[in-house]
Image 1 (spheres, rainbow, N blue to C red):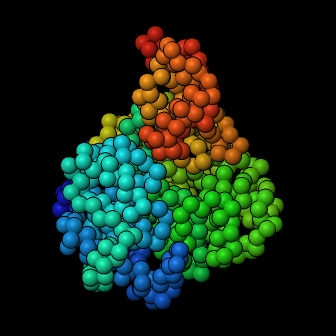
Image 2 (cartoon, rainbow, N blue to C red):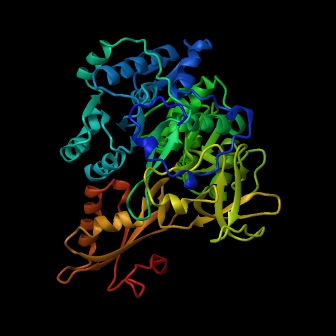
Length: 531
């Protein structure tokens, strides 16, 4: 076995079998990683070694930390994790918090202490948290005080969760202050797992995507080094949660890689985001097309001349949204497609090499091709499934779905594209039942299973329908049980029920009552007929 810094090897032992792994390729000099690598040591400790200690690293509500300040806090939390909470390298740590500098400290401290971070969306409910804790055999948790309620509700049914530390209150501050600001990063291997990113599955059972310390650095080297090209003078800002790999890269790892600054704030609605860009002189912003659409008409009310680069991902960027943003700001967007399975953006359009409607080409280090169901390449101009390989790829945690997600060494993304004769890729649609709404991935079966728990619901089917603001919204087709009436009151009742039993963004904004649902002879729901 190769060297590992992990003592708890649960994640390593539950990687896919060798014959189901993607083929990893490391074609550029920057991707030749050493055997020993710790992501926090490279992103943070090395920054201080290079003289960045007094540069501003993080900005938040009443917070303005230098790189030296950040390192001290990360070291103190790593000490607390290992000394008070008994963390050993390889243990899984559930992370629960909004986008704040303190949540960033949690990520960096877990990596530095050799733990495996399991980020969770702030809106997740107890039922969903229990599922992730069980799947990941999570033993530790760091939870923002304001988000502790759902975790507390889940905890009695999670015997594997031994240690929970709540941060953001006086008790935590006192404990942290007692810890040393010196901590040597655990000597992790470059191929030791650093995080498990859970994503919605079409069965409703989340898939745990395992990413290694080298994957974190590969994401930075490819996206920053070749595409975004930030400098130490940049100020990053944006909306994606750090629990999403889109946000983890764009608002934490990329700024640190560049020795730049990042503004981490919660609940950045488009009107608040555009005000914050002005207030903090942000130069690079990350958000979904929905955010850019809603900010565009507000631009005349703000001075955002500091802004130099705008990154769009999470859902399809329309030609109209790109055009209006360019006309209002003079900025041609950085538009890309990424995915939890590949950790971040792997195919993108360069602002100076943009073709209308195209998502561009694979970033350096990645290869892509379009295939049919038998993995045969499809001709130019024809639609096929996008297959990708590069320095990162799909590794599910102990999951049978690995077999269909990686074929012949290629990660199958589940997206349908066509390619023109010059090699530019054009997105068509998802090929599975994942609905992308405002950048969130929502599984149809997952929402259906919640609705079916309501006593009035006999059958249901959930699909995504186009929406000008959110890309897609959820629509539920519902067959009621006898004795119930499909009126506006029932619509609200069912919507509220979903909000209470799942993350609120998963509720159906449109509900249609029907007498029957289309099914196959074997009883399988035919969602495509609902569309």
